[in-house]
Image (cartoon, rainbow, N blue to C red; front, top):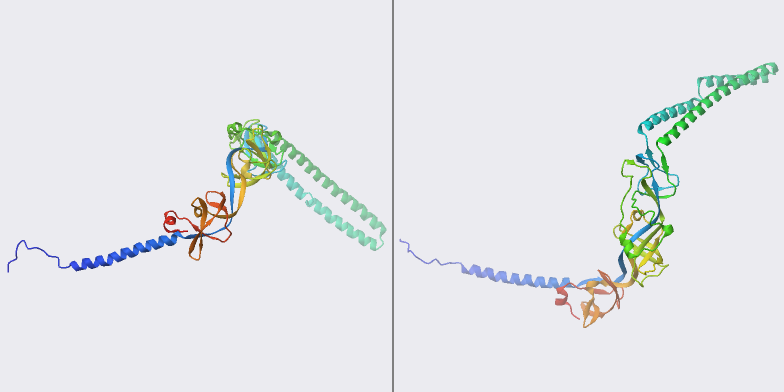
Amino acid sequence: MKKRTGAKVINLRPKKKRQKRRIFLPLLLGLFLFLILFLRSSARDIYIAREETVEDFFTSEAVIVKNEKVINSPAGGRLEVLVKAGERVRVNSPLFKVVTDVERKMSLDKDIGELEEKLNRLKEQSGSTLTIQILDKSIDDIERKIREARSKGQADRVAALEKELLRLEGEKKEIIAENNEAVQILEKSLESQKKKLEEVEPVVLSPVAGIVSFNIDGYEDLLRSERLKCLDYEEIKGVVPRQESAALSDNVKVNQAVLKIVDNFSLYVIAQIPEGNFQPGRKYDLRFPQLNIEVKADLIEICEDEQTGVFSIKEAPVELLELRKVNVEIVVLVHRGIGVPNSAVVNSNGQEGVFLFNKGELVFKPIRVVARDDNKTIVEGLKAGDRVLIKRGFQWRLFSRT
């Protein structure tokens, strides 16, 4: 049989394609309905109204003024610091020492070590030498014989034994005196060598109690609490902290600043403030974002320009003692009341309000906004426990109703 050329090819399975189309379209429609229902349900996120706080605060540049005592080196030489930053010290606590002559110090250290070793050995042996032990044994033996002679009524023998006892005790006292004299001689020699070492290696003691800081910025004498004065805004901006501590190097010069002792029970913050919102004598919350700390402070003075305030902090955190210039958040007022997320508040026909969700129904509830921050709003017109609908962008407009 011959095949016919140019014959038309006919697809014999068109029904299966139509069947696939009939199955696919209902699936696509079902998926669309599912998405609509999902968006509708997710639009109705509920928030339970509760007590919240919103703070009115502002950020300002500030200068920190402290009671601080800079400690200088009494001589030039190699520096050896004996304390750590942030350590609390008492009056007369050793702070650092300066080695002015290294070779001389090594020689004196050797002499002092040998003298201390001899002195300790002599003190340990002063009551336990062989001679003393023999004398003690002889004294005990004589005392025993005296008791026996007395019990037998031998008066002449008692007298002779007592004379011998006095001789032995006198000999023991002489030996002890010689040992004590040797101890005193060694102690004087040791004291003399230590005084020489103090000249070669002077140790500096703390004149005041406080917290150790190595951050010397040059404003310690200019910004002092005992002559506390107001600074205007330009003066605050002009403060440029710098670190000049010698404690980070191995050598110092005579009269060079090494460290400072800071009183953390008396600290002042001088900051720019807006007019009309502050009252001297009132406490304010001060936040220092870079340190993540918050403290309470008394406003003790408003300067003549009425744009600068002086705040006093008692028992300041150690981290704050290291700073001179800082940004501070000053809390002016704290609002407390029923709060909801900002996304819950809407405007309907010029009236601010929220949608309450109750038994599956949405009811518009007018409110009065008391205060608002970046996340929440304090309102009047709601009570704790109210179920408030949270707005979700376009979903709110699609599915919410009054």
